[in-house]
Image 1 (cartoon, rainbow, N blue to C red):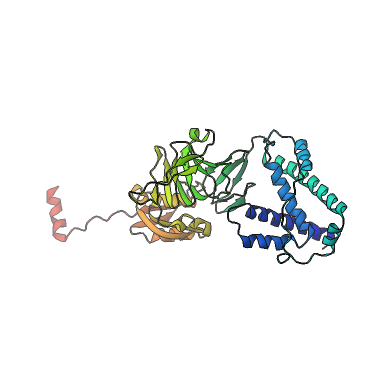
Image 2: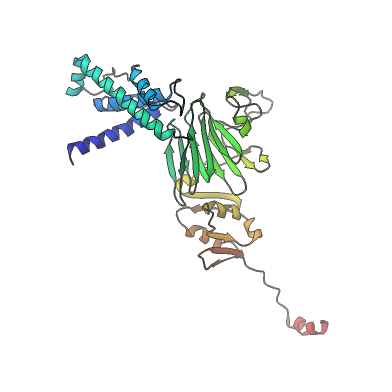
Length: 402
């Protein structure tokens, strides 16, 4: 491997690690131990310092109040990045956290000129990176589409630090704006882990309604007849699309769960319009053609996210819903040829990566018959009830009553 190839791979690795550090340190979950570990990582070489400064400078430019997407031209971004000289506080003064500097560190500290040249180079590189990222993220239309195929799952780290995990045969449209983060769940199921930012609500459009978060974790599943919204951490607000278009202002709400009878509710601020439905941890609503259901408690949140572990966990659910969830691509590999059987309540656990697991489960259901169609589809139906057997005496009497 040549020195150039090795250097390119190292730069790419440091860039990826620097991005991960930026996301962690700017989130709510960062701990003092994380910061000490970051100091150890960043002080190992000036290349790591440069990689982190690039990310920090880039995010400063992208978050600037003067930047309006997608109207700001690339030349203006370059000027903004070059003019940005705010130092990035890395706090590299903790000798216990940082290893002894190597000779390249010493060269940077001995003279101000190398440091100035490094800063200028970083600013120019950040400017070009900002322009390239702007062209990629904020194309005309301002949105990016991510999708998965049948049997595929995908985890996407968004530019704001949020993470979206897509289930099989799912798709989202992402539009990160200056004052709002807008996601459209086009089909399937997604788990949202939202980076905390009260100034930029995170709106997910699903089945005509909007689920808003400012920093939380929730799951949305577009089922055949409705959409299920389940809160795993924090709080979300469910509202109409018209309500979501209103100017964002923090309002006081009384959470509807976890309050003892007779105790006055503790008001909380949330950027949602009046009339929005506020959901807390372990609550679920269904978005139906007739509106949003009342919140329901969720006893087992691990079952909600079982699909991220390759499982489908269902308890007292109609068999038709289970089959529809597995046949997310809509090609109906398994057809329930009986309305009564589709409504039958079933409970079980199925491995999503084993196509035979559902058929094996169905074969154990009393009265079920499975036959293979000519097109490869498995048709599941109920075995017809056998007519009662007639006794010999009854058989001999039957003709006389015709």
